[in-house]
Image (cartoon, rainbow, N blue to C red; front, side, top):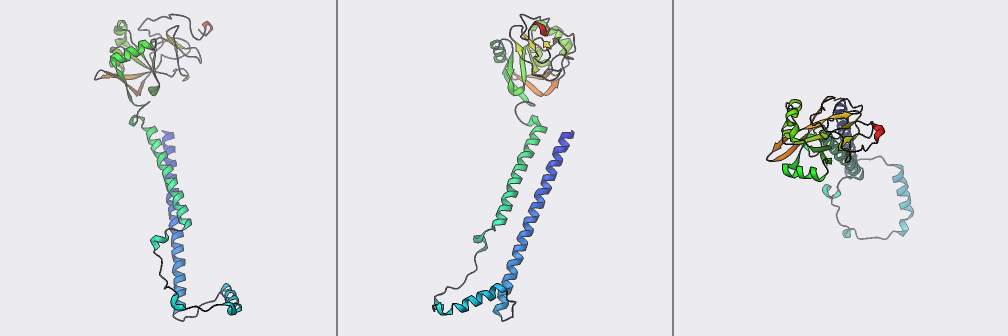
Length: 282
């Protein structure tokens, strides 16, 4: 919550800075317009005979022109085309205005991208991947994939392990999981486990030889449905809410359920071979 408030505060400050930059750009434009207006007034004053202050540069220019009078060639004034005021749209914006507007535009674009990323992070269910409901696939296909993966199907987009829940353990499972949001998937014969160890958050890999999940950080290990079988972890592996929709297994990775307490072992599974961490780890 604190992080979200901090991010919202940053976005508000950035919007204020963007508004202030736009105001400065408009002020510069106003000054430029006022300067052009003053120059036009000076030209008009000269046209009607009003005496105008002469600058030093104009005096030097007049002196240089007087010295060069002998070198000037007369020309026919009728050949001079009348002056026509340029079209403001053709002139476009000044270089400074162009740079200011470009910088403000890029800043606004970056701010929009940052805001979209913040929204996607705060409301992950609005996008696909972790934090949303993931369609793992048709029930029969998922079961075949688990078998092909030697009992451990990993889905990186959901940061989860999908395993089979033994049908013979469903009676015991109903006591432990029957009132959880994961029960529809368990009853269909599946378990979707969060990949993080509940001890200190390490990613827990599978061990093909022992057929257990074994944490390489501190030696906690779990059976195929994530129930703790040893190590310092305070509970079993966390798991996700599951449902069966139109014959497909759907895992809601935005709904994480805390793992079962120490001692729960609904499947009765024992280690089938040597540990991948070595005997010293246990």
